[in-house]
Length: 349
Image 1 (tube, rainbow, N blue to C red):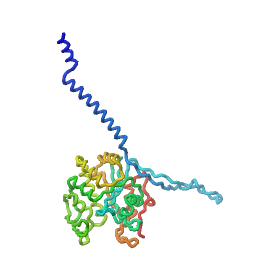
Image 2: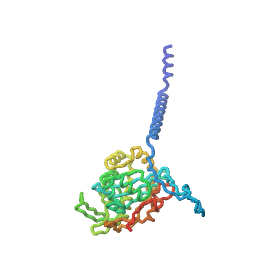
Image 3: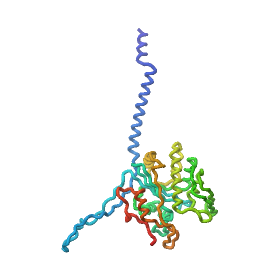
Image 4: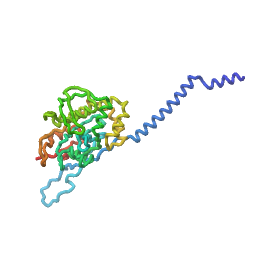
């Protein structure tokens, strides 16, 4: 009788394999529940960034025509402000890099990211672009009015709202390039420039062609403007080099996700932005689907860099018609076209 009870107890316990499957099943159920909880928390907390409110635009409306001089004008037939409509999932960013002194902005770019269609436009604004300021060059705005002032000036210039800003100093750029192990990059021309008075002194010497750049070398290449003899390239050529190098670094960052802790540390110490942590997480999840080879378009605003304005030489006056086309094809956050009267591209004469 006792033996039969023992056998029954053993039977109730089941085989070791059965116990293992039951334990595995319970573990899967618990993990599934945790995944659901974390997913719900993610959806509740990580939301798309805010979009800046667009201004209103006056759209002409048809008016009644009459030959009766005693008939009063119908005020309801006058043009009425019509709100501009933002594209869903379309964001605009001001990207600025400060020079070594931290005063002027050595690089100014507007980035438009269409998350719905996974397209990105990167447009450089030449540092000497003409603006209506005491010092009539856009790179001086940051020193006098800060990032909010620069954001307003850029928005007024191109006729679209800037949703968010990101500023980075040169030290952060160097650290990021070093964190990804440097980049292979085609230097577009021979570079020979020395400035012993700079702090620290500059000594830039590179041959045209493909080379591997570490952080310090990459910084020198993006800052290069001309050689000791005055030859070199224009602001447009310089902006194109900056864009290409930025994309090359971006590719290395996406190819090394295991160094996320290093990227976060560099970001926190060298970048200023009005994006929240949840904004950044949301944008990062979207950017995982962006093809940097085919989904990114780049341009530099065309113009004349020899203009003199209010006693200041070598101002860069934008070519209005050509720039407007770039605004509409690469940066436009609206469902309708940007018109010339929405922009403020100052002309010297």
